[in-house]
Length: 61
Image (tube, rainbow, N blue to C red; front, side, top):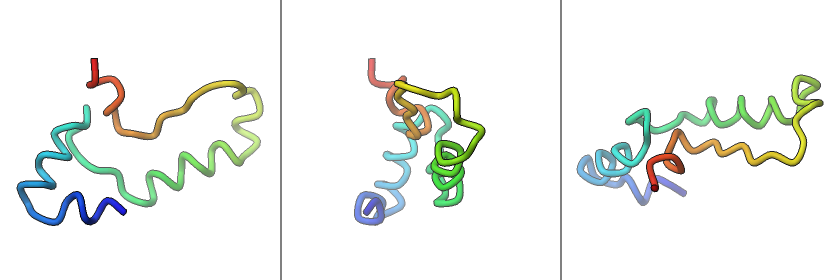
């Protein structure tokens, strides 16, 4: 889905600049977040928003 947003080097640089860590996530990084929520490690995580957005939401103030 994001490939159309980063079709050119300029567009990719712009999107990366939106993130606090200044890079895009790999599919593996997103998958690890999903695995955490599906695992027993998250049994005490309830009623919380867990943005996996590499800091975009904290940059939008």
